Image (tube, rainbow, N blue to C red; front, side, top):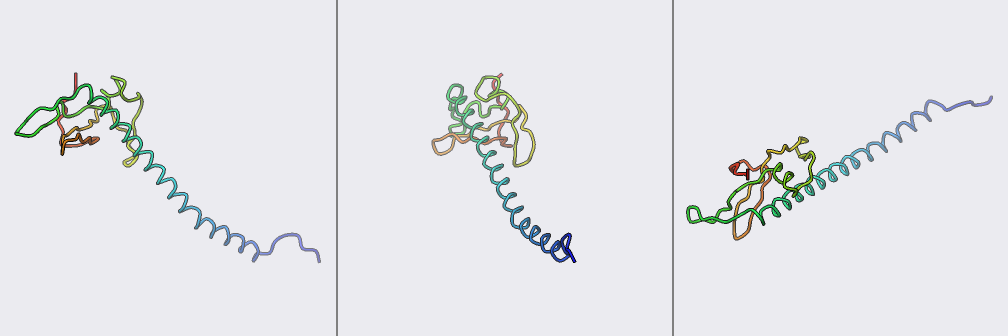
Length: 131
């Protein structure tokens, strides 16, 4: 008698092999995607801080307050950086929270141990942006 197909055992074996391959492949793909998203987010933050540093070089002054040196103004918004050409126009995404950073998001600038420290979206800074 001539055989015209696969037996049930053969089909189950193939499905089992495919399932094992998927169990190996899917987590590694998720890890790759997660690492690339994190790397992109870090690169974007570095670009924003670089733009804030460039802006600071032209607009920032150190003033003394309570016997400490503080930068004045102590923050700049993403919108200002975009309007003045330090940062490209367009949406800026926070890939950690999967949200858009709007143009009112501030980069706080502090002065600590003889260097400026930049914090994106810091809660403690005042909104002392240029007009």
